[in-house]
Amino acid sequence: MLFRLPVFLCCTVFTKMVRWFCSSALCFNNHNSLHDKGKPIKAYRLPRNPQVQAEYRNILKNSGFSWKNGHICAEHWQNGVRMDTNDLPNVAVSSSQVDGHRIKYENALKAVNAATNVSAKQREP
Ligand SMILES: [Zn+2]
Image (cartoon, rainbow, N blue to C red):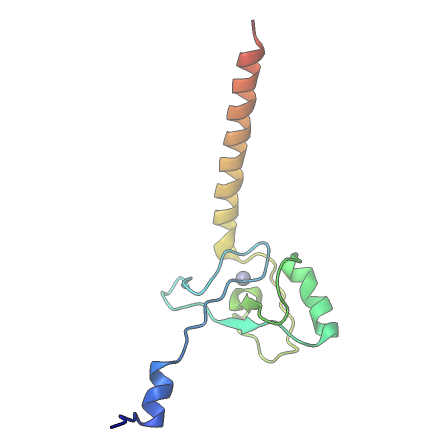
């Protein structure tokens, strides 16, 4: 005997969660990122129109992503929402990302300083 589920239940059970990462080189947001208010950050598919893609390149500052499967997070729009597919992003680095970049820069600077101090001590007789 074949057991059949109602169609709406099958679709609900097998719906895949979209795991996205922002295509911007200067953004760390992904499907787990939350707003300051604790709500998930919305993501949008990248545009298919080549003329609009050219405008997006100014904000994304990245080439290692797929236009077909890539996403961009809502933090790249000043009002936090993309109105339509031709609404261009206008924020390269959102305020929530600045602290992350500063911490990475400071850690990299410490690593460089530590490496140069070690190599200078090794050179001393
Ligand atoms: Zn982003």
